[in-house]
Length: 146
Image (cartoon, rainbow, N blue to C red):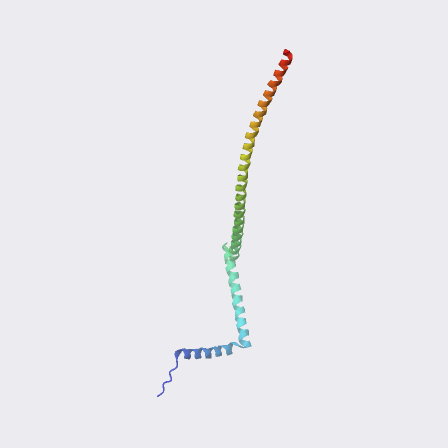
């Protein structure tokens, strides 16, 4: 006796192939397509009706709707974008402020040095003028003494 046991993998592959042919032949026609389209349209109509009923109940009980949450999330995203922009501006301004502070320190140091130099020059000028005036006075005295 000869055993006709088929490999299970082959058997299921063959079975799958036959079922696919049957499904394809029954769904690959105009009637199925029209019926399927009508079924989808009926389903979408039911979804719209359910959405209207849910929205009316939400409105009646003063609950937030999906659109309210969507608008709120958009506002949140816009707020986050504005915060990011402000953060970036603050960072840039902080860098500019630090640079300006450094420049001001250098300017202050230079001005302090210039003030010291000018004070020394003023002292020298006063001393020189006093000496000059003393010399002039001495000369005038000699003129009147003679």
